[in-house]
Image (cartoon, rainbow over all chains, first blue to last red; front, side, top):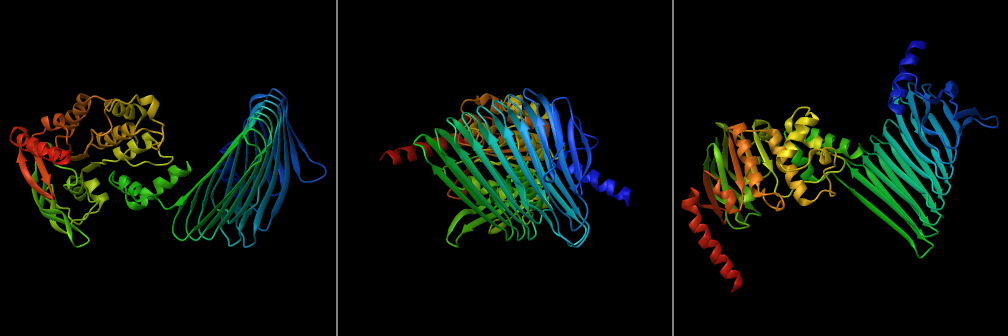
Length: 309
Length: 236
């Protein structure tokens, strides 16, 4: 039993965090609602919260070229794990943060993870935040994830969030909120693939409060089977700023995709743009790859994989 | 190598686009020319399997491929460079060259091919084949895929379009080098005299029919007259 658990944990860690052995730098691995292992460095401290489940990740000002991994693993059926993780990124730090959740549901009860991540990005800090969600199941229980990300960006800071949900999550509602101050930039790159009867909803709400602040929210998704996706992108331009949101979806089988942009410009110098393109794979793309010797199915796979790469 | 027997292609039951084409293509450079809308690209698509003829038979290397899919024809040794290259999202130049070669292509192999079509490899290898590339760049990548495939029959649909900045001589060198490698047929749809110059055989297609076949010296004077006529008609 312990052995099986290890293999599952290892697989999930490899899927969500590209971790094959113990990660370098600071990390906090949470398994089935409990701390499994942790490492801190001279510049990055991780502290367990005392008032609620979760951790504080404190990154010292000026920390450069360091990374933090905080994966969450759930391999018990019927477990719903709720955590609050707060990141305090010191001024002028330049770090990579890798989060992610993997669920292996072997039973018939629903398993879930609701992570609420709050980023306090200090002045001039630069953060790359990578988050991956993955699920697998042997039983009939559903894998449910509802991540919330709150980003507060100080002057001249930069945060790029890469979020991926490719497989095995039956239901997800993602909420991402950002407040962006002077000259700060908030970038989101989302990739989603749903299949079967899965449902994925993502909601972005970015307030460009600062002068020359900017945001770019880009979602690329593939909806297969009878799955449904909903993409909401609200950007408020409250100052001289630029905001762009984009929903680009490949629709297959009997899937349904909804894209709802909401742009509010409250300043005459706010430049806001939304683009949405939803449609099936272009026939000419399939034919081109078939003229290279791929079957129609192989061509479809290649196009989808490239799209989500 | 390639034989077309009485190929007909009719759209919506009325207008014929290809009207009874019989053609025998051997090894070497074959150019297909003729006025726009005459059916050149349609014929190329029929050979590649993208368009199914209404009637007729296509024999490739002694095998009847009339009912073969695009995929099977590609595997049998037919390559087709589109007139308008297709754009993708997320698929890179290297991805396409790897798929075209049918095997994992090393960076240096991919670079060599890209250099042949006049692209500085390092700048392009990881570029996505999307709208950020110019028409000329896409066209050269399209040609590079055919070089990577090295099949017995390579069809190029107006390869010169959009590559004005790259010299014609380089394009012709690509064809010659490819020919030396594959020892097969290169079928080029073109209006350009310089491309017609290298053809062993020129086929003129007008109104869905073959109106002339022969060497450049035999065919060119007739073509010039036709062009002069149509230019004159347009002016009038």
